[in-house]
Length: 373
Image (cartoon, rainbow, N blue to C red; front, side):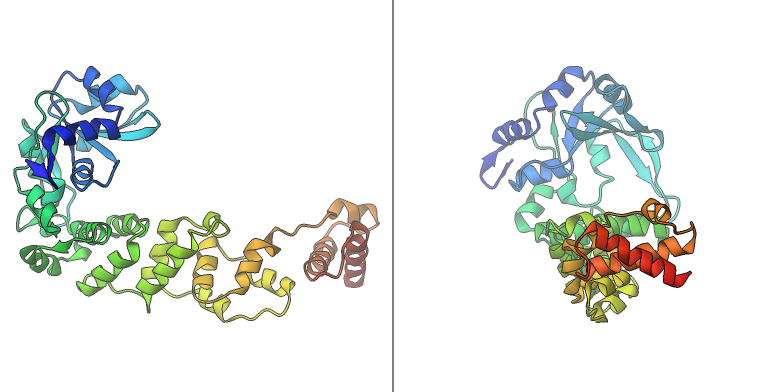
């Protein structure tokens, strides 16, 4: 098969060029190993290196242990994660899955072929494989290559969203990331999905994976459009502003992208609204308002329009006194609440530009401590 005019031999070569760690894996393997899922999809789309998922028709954990004796293995799902050449490689034994009831975790059984394993996957574009050894070939039993060319997401069977409703969230993630549309039959099945059939932890976990992506605002908008998720007011737009804000080096350290974008899209409005409405007249007031808030709240407030937080993040929250409590005790202040009051007064004065030396800080703190005594 060819994709975008590229023969499978060239694709196999490109795969090895993108993932030089495959050479060591091939040397260690004694059973058939296949590159599957996103790495194959993104290679066919010429999107460059992707996360590497390997399928072993046999004992994946045994192969992984040869490469990384300290691997993290998950016996229930016959998977293992290996640190290799500075990255992570996921190994999985070929398996089939069945679902005792809608939304349940799958019951896993070994499969004796790559084709059987591909049949348990979410969308046709993720159900393709390339063997690590032997003649280069694209294994595509469900027409994923054709759907890639058409820009379509198609489930493999009609019960796909019933078995695992979180696939609907994955559909939004892939559609947003790749710019794909839902195949009409898949769209009909998806709109009947009951996300409440899975636990809140699984549902939120999948939404956080969506939120961590650059295309997350579009993904959340799709879920709302499909009737599967209720966003907070202007949630998709707020999520986009939060994502842009966290690309700024000054703001990026304050919050992880996933939780912040998730809160922007679907979280309940909270303290960020009060911060956004505040108009502090001096730096000390700004610090008093912002210092007790966590990073997500600060990011949301700035995305809602609290421009004064740029100064807080860039300058004011890092302001520190040159004096400490030991200096006040040495000057005759008894340990206790007066120390805190004195230091707080000195910090307010420093923030507001009323002191500019250690001596002035100490004088301000002593005055406040003694007046409060």
